[in-house]
Length: 449
Image (cartoon, rainbow, N blue to C red):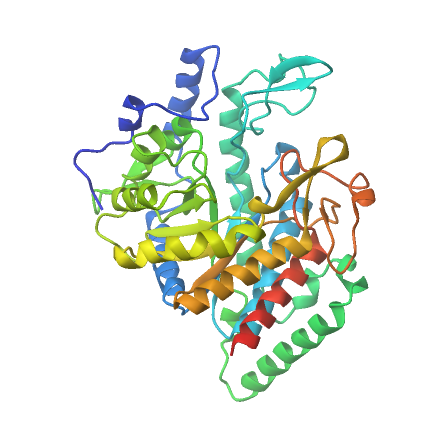
């Protein structure tokens, strides 16, 4: 893909939403120049392979599991935190592979998800107005002072370093056999053993181990390949100067790739036509995800898809719907009709998290496990009825035993939220809730026949 009317800086001629106001533009450009000089984090070949897998998922041959933190925090760039995130995603993918009988594409919201869009540029703290927290790559969550909330370009440099460190650790774990299916119990965190689903999961693991052992007796399994998996990274392409600095031209094809991640996505707040984010995204060769909520207009989406994927390339566009449980049956069918009538080629994902956020006492955000599950079921049902494929799910989750979403087998209530609430932005499923969610997905597919 190579558009001669586009270059990595062409977005600068358009209005840009959700961009921090840096007090020193020269400092910002110096930092971006430094990032531009560094080696990329991923390769074009990896990006192209993910695009192929996404196309196969859109055709019903794979299932996509995308998950990770709402917003990564600098303090969580440590071996334990990264390992636990990979543990939960691997364990979820084992359950899905076994239950759905198809390969799972693993995409983490990791190694770059350090920025977040905000509904307001300011917030009130102790009766005074201060800039909103926009993610660790922009400003500090605490202390909540005007000084700490002033955008700092040096945080972009730290974001790059920590993304590289995170990727290095993930690759080292995978190359070192961490994902070897001979040792699935090394992934376990003790919290899940206390839930009603543990016995079912234990049985699945035993059946997988029995199958591996049986096939190896007959020489039918290459034990070297059992520990080798593909793991891809993604983040919201929000801070356009940073994304531009990570964009490189592939000399073999002449195409430009964002090599800060395998996939980047347009958020529901930054997908407006004739704006800077759409201009940037239309020119990169990466697979692109687009998130849409209940306010999305069919005509606007049609125009956006034409801009982003004029050649209707399979795997290029992933449409992530995030309507909220009560709006799926009203909002999704017209979108599917529009896509079908206009011949758009894309892969459908469900994000059951963002449309189901509520605020309780003390302005604490939470999500109800049952509402998340309801949106998944409703989305799957609509796609099945209309002859399209829900090819995957997108979760905000963590491998820690946080208490941020209520409900689930561990029966968290609003009274539990303050016990271990760690997210700086939106609430995440904890380890046990995440496993329970994928059990429900496999049951949903099985019941559908």
